Length: 491
Image (tube, rainbow, N blue to C red):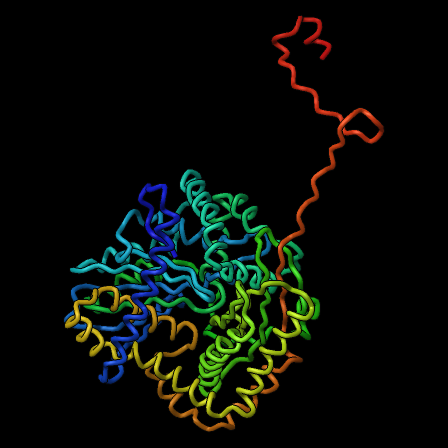
């Protein structure tokens, strides 16, 4: 996540405070939504000339408009030698739009995407169009700004390690492992090595590559004028290859046997294992089952993780979309060690949860489906949600921005809107829908990436005294200007 630059040297601390505030706002949003009973929101989807999807969510009594650009440049979009370049791009794009309050302009990089949010009261939608245009066009990345943002990211690494948030770096390594053979990753070194021209090229190649980008607008806006402005400013921009979410063939181990079981070292002091299962292109029922599986397996893995978790062992099931738009089920774990016994137990636990969920645990499967429906439904019932938020005095603009984010992400990840997803999930109650997934999510189709700290470099032994094998003390440098001319010349 990113807080707009303010020149405050303590910015790395406020970034994580903002992350906590974002999490709190999401919890409040879900709690308020649980009291809502209104029907699904009315939305409209339009495709701009260059292939970007525009999602309009009109709210007639809104104080302004919230715009969200969902770009396929996520945590998993880094390529070998370019660790954290997606995060660095996020910070450079935020700096390009200038200093602004956190609740007006906010950029955030998650596993499958980057979320670029603009939200202001009044008739500020034209300013939002200008911000979206800047983020997509990225006219320049000044060297002095890049140097400043590099330092901010490097300063934050130790804080991220302390807060056990290195999963974001692990997902970067996972994305890199799918695009090229790697044995070692230097998170800090790759950040230090970023050059403005190379970073701009990274933006050009990755910012719209893979899954089709989405612009979601929620609030009060002049429909005709907004569409015309977006078509003129953004629809004319050349963008890279785009395709609907989950439409690409599976990235199967048979095509890439060397990548199926990979080990990588890095310059961080934590151990991770990332399991993933490539998914085929999904129909509507398949998308509903994926949402059910992601929701249910995530819940069950968290429960199972508590049984053997020690200190830094965490379990996450992020939304899985690789750097090139291939859909995957991903289970990421932070481990206390990577001894074979630990890895064997992790493999067994993960596979037992998935196999049990698909084969025999009908109760958990039904609960996972209802959980997925509930998550979608909370954001669909935003009319009553906003009314309740107004009554309780919760910031309305932040809620509307979150509504835009969730609707935009649904279109980005699933290829359709929330209302359709709810209908599909309601109709996916037949347990036979789990049958095709048994092979897709089997142990035979599981990929594994193990990430470990690189070995510490041994310090050279220094022996005292002048005996054989003693290391000579380096001579003190001599300033030539202090010597006689003949000595300086001879060196």
